Amino acid sequence: MNKPLLGKAALITGSTSGIGLALAHVLAKAGANIMLNGFGDADDIAAMVAKIEGEYGVTARYGAADMTRPGEIAALVGATHAAFGRLDIAIPNAGIQHVSPVEDFPVDKWDAILAINLSSAFHVIRAALPLMKAAGFGRIVNMASAHALVASPYKAAYVAAKHGLAGLTKTVALEVAQSGITCNAICPGYVKTPLVENQITDTARARGISEKAVVTDVILAAQPTKKFVTYDQLGGLLLYLVSDAGASVNGALLSVDGGWTAQ
Image (cartoon, rainbow, N blue to C red; front, side):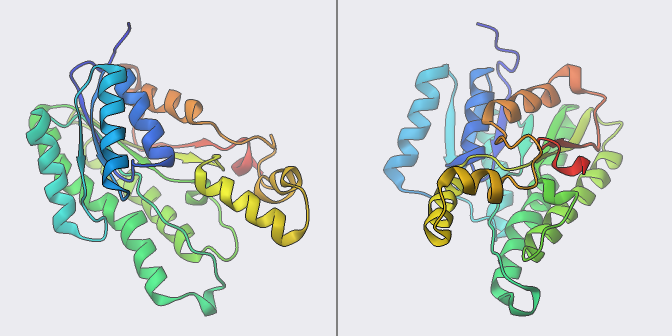
């Protein structure tokens, strides 16, 4: 089997579900050892680790760092390096959402979204860079969003955080450009994660319309293709970015959104 990442080590935050877990499988299939992170039932997480190891013949570990605690984030980066003897790929992916008009936006929700969606990426990168510089190689891929490039109403904190992540990506890219390290951001449109699937069901019930109508007229209203972005599509771009072929892609905000941000 072709394993272009054989022996490399990757840390993915927020990877016990959704996009993060899917990307963990993509990297493990390519041969990378994986550090998972996120919340969940201990038995379920142990099963995820075992599944990755069993399916792909790599080593997987789990770190329970809270993305609102900088010290725990730094310790997670250190634990990844200790477990695998290296840290080649860092993917700050953890994120949360809250929808509310600005004047009613709960302050605690604003603080939490900025901490998890933006500041945690800074703390991962800050801790990872010395290790990557010492090795002369690193790939940082921030999981941003179409909302890193455009806004939507009632998502002030999320949009602000993702715009901030775009700026952080560019700044880091310039700082590491001669160090064998790249820093880019993938900016997906809507992906059919478990969270979105629940949203479809709830919206259909609340509006009294079909789930198909919710998908085309509500969820994917901004995506011209009217199709969800798939995990495989995100994974394909990720593999390119972390490969030698992607070495000259640096500081890029790469849209995978069915044309959303082309409008």
